[in-house]
Image (cartoon, rainbow over all chains, first blue to last red; front, side, top):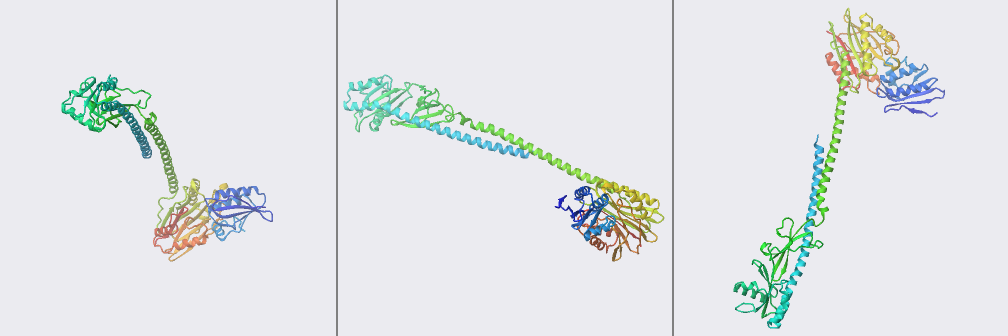
Length: 108
Length: 516
């Protein structure tokens, strides 16, 4: 299935795809901060709302996020019980760990 | 304010003036040229008329020479010409005689005969050698006559003389359909426009003013001077009125343009005033929000024997919204002081109000004697981030002043820094999830501060940089905290080195040390 590219802002973007196992994969790319977290978050919410099954949020392309990005991820995880977050970069992983959220966000 | 419209008006009027002046100059030149043409035409007409007046004399002179002054021949020729038109008197004179008297007179007696002998001799001599008609000006006499003399051949024996009447105030009207119908004219004998030499004119008192032109034609051995003046515009009314049209329309257009520009200028000024007003409101709004934020922070820190405290709060430079950073120092009694540094996610009044709730909730729990981990646990159950996912990171440190010990509990907040002499290390607290996300685990971490040691708690605005690994940011913070003297020096140094341009985000810092 062709990837759907939406919610792109100057800094970051949200990409959605379906992987081989049929799960929806949402990739966060670029940077997330207070300037674009609202726009990207709304798009992420829509993707999670239309997706019935398990969702993977892939952070491989995410270079940086601040507390606004963390708030966005917290909301995504809280909304869907079957959300899995994976592949954070070292920087993003440390940002999440420093905030005591590694367990809450179920980073694999 | 009125400078630009006034400039437009002045430039417009200047252009109008130049155009009107140009039109007027063209008109004047045109009128001069047309008048000059009419004068030239009049000169041609006068030349022909003057020649016609002389023609009978020429015939009479030839006849007199041929007939040796035969009286009946001379009378027969001149009789029909002396009934007033063209002459009133004709006479034949000897060309060369010591006693100059007329040999023969046809019609009225010549006025010339009444003149002195020398005057008459002079005239006859002049006529004998002139080879053309000679003119005698008798206009000054009561009869107002003009005399014409002529002699035929190189050695004439006779001189023919005739006089015509030139009654005073002689007026020759011009038919309205001729080329001269638009003009007044006056014809003088000689080359000067004097009333005493006036031969003919179109009006009674030809004393022309304004635009005049004159021309001269040969009249026997004298001259005729014609002076002309136009009665109306020779080039037509349109060209004459053009300068006025240009002036009228030009002034109207200039005024319209000036008014239009005035309106545009006023609109622009209005827009500028609005922009200035908006900018002022923006500053005031930001100022109000900052005032609110500052008012939620303790103005004066409580004093504790043996303990030294310093704090800083710096609002971020980005945007109008205030952040949710705060610090607090609470005296919980019995030699214990609670230090708090926190950061509510998001910005604006909502973040500030959540911050206020958290701050007073912490004070309430602390006053009941709760330990830091218990405070955070209670706080985590009190606050629900909810749909907006608003959460707060909080670091609480309960200071046992006497034992130089601090018990930390941490909900998602950066670890405090302990600076001792030339080394600095972060206190490895147990980091629970932020308040509003999940229940706080409630694990405390104790740290004992050695003599000279300084504990620094802060919010992420101090060290966090976009795209940077937090470990790198924290290492820079640790290095910047070394080598300072007083607490104030330390905090100023941190702000100066880590946020030299004012900082992207809000920043709160709290430092504590024991007095030696």
